[in-house]
Image 1 (cartoon, rainbow, N blue to C red):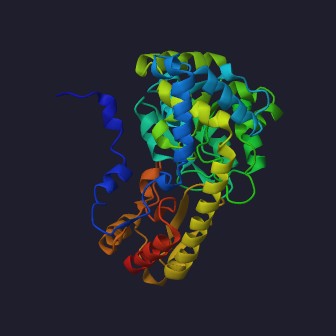
Image 2 (cartoon, helix red, strand yellow; image 1 turned 120 degrees about the horizontal axis):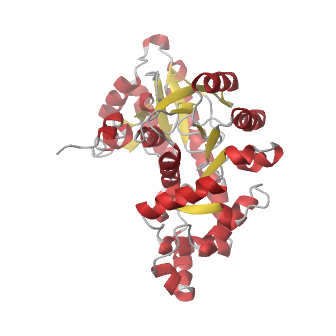
Image 3 (spheres, helix red, strand yellow; image 1 turned 30 degrees about the vertical axis):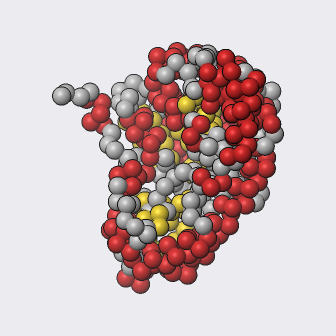
Length: 396
């Protein structure tokens, strides 16, 4: 069978390939990028689904509008307003099947094979693959703990004239970096100056451990004239409510939103109306603040436990910044005291010791750093984290 040539530009996710090795009994996994199912508000979701079937059975079970279930769009607009996006209207967003579909719609509507896309280096692996399906050159921009390097970003915009810049400003996956307020405002200024689309992916912004992060690019766009014309914001309930609902959304300029809706209509017609009605009822019930408070507290404890264990068991063999939110610790093997600097080699040794993580190299669009690794603290409790990191230290 002859497959489309565009598939030659992508490969199976290294993370999903790693999952094939996790069947070994007793293995402790820090490899996944998903939330802990033990913290899902099952009771709240159950009650929301029951209300959806009781109060709006036709809308919940019938075909629906491609743009999304209007009660959910209204609730999502209100949710975004509560996070500083003043005056956002329901008709300024569409509901997508997870934020991953929103990113795919960005690719479908904007990208051609001759285009260039700039992403953070490192960045979300699935986005690299998603955009490459449409043929552009995907290039990485350096980052540090405060987010994207603005000098490098502007230089690369000038040199390559990208069709879009993709950023995860708040607790990026895998880096955990949080872009500073000053850099966020400057990113918006660059978007206007060079008339370049900036895509803000924000699945982790509500998962902060102490102080709230700076406002999203979408919220800050009110301070930078004309920046909203060049901004796409992708949101998701997957990390804070349930990934199984597959509820995401996209806020974008009207012309882009209309074309994204058209492409979505051809793709899946609409996101599950039952899932949308359930999510709308959940948000309307006002349970989200308590849910967020709980997950923040639990993840903060697990992040602290992982960082302490890494310092104890890997010491100078690993360098990292303690995350302020999100789901990950991003670290680099230093090679000090004779330890390995090869993340792929360490991953294999770690599996033999009964612990799994993801090597960092696949998260780079180009020039991969093989000394980097990503560890998720989301799905293991603090005792398992301590045990798993001890095993990792033995593998090092």
